[in-house]
Amino acid sequence: MAKSRKVIITCAVTGSIHTPSMSPHLPVTASEIADAAIGAAEAGAAGVHLHARNPKDGRPDQSPEAFAPFLKVIKQRSNVVVNITTGGGMGMTVEQRVAPAATFKPEIASLNMGTMNFGLFPMLQRQKEFKYDWEKPYIEGTRAGTILIGSSRERVGFDRTVSLPAMREIASKALSLFPALARTRIMRCYSGFRPYCPDHLPVIGADPRIAGVFHAVGHEGAGIGLAPATGRLVVQLLTGEATTVDPTPYSPVRFIDERIST
Image (cartoon, rainbow, N blue to C red; front, side, top):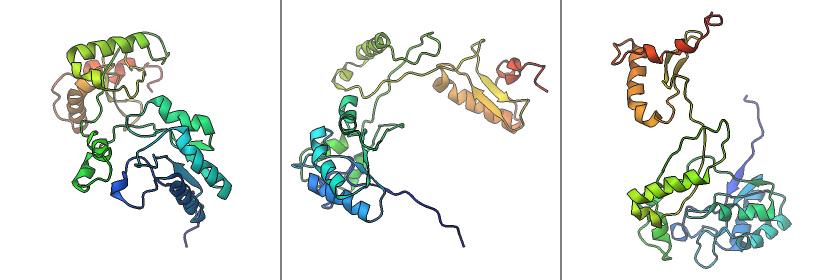
């Protein structure tokens, strides 16, 4: 007989992806969201993940004023753990997304670590009629996806601070090539580290110290452009085929100290 184990259940009662026309059971008003959250707690959920909506048309609403009515009721009627979203909804600024969590300081707040490029437009294949004018543009507006623009190279050690001058320069050059971008909104910016080697060549090949370890790293800022050639070379090295290019300059051996290689 399998040993039983404890399970933590959390319930997202309304979210921001679905629209009111998709289901009559989607909680929209403060009382509906509160009742859904309390019902989830009574059914066994330890936590509830909360979004807010405009009670008139169901549009996602990330204002603290929209959260306040149902947060108070949930706390009064249950001891469920409250998790306030910082994802909000599409088109919201970072400041708008974090405002409710910063205001109410819940036990937990969500943090989206992955892409925010939601492609909701396939829902239009199922949903043909809409109750509110905002719904169809909200869903169809994601068909084009997001645009990634970059980037810069700065020798600043391990400082990951985003450079505003670099952002302005990137935006300026992007607008000069694609003027239509002037009507778009910046969703996020980020910085990181570019892995590169002293000789500015990537490291591709088997690690002679550890069986089964194969390196394909250190492309600096050219990883995307060099990906097809790197993939082909990796396959050729792994299968023993004749290589298209001489792999010697990229071998990990060039950086392994002979004193510790054995």
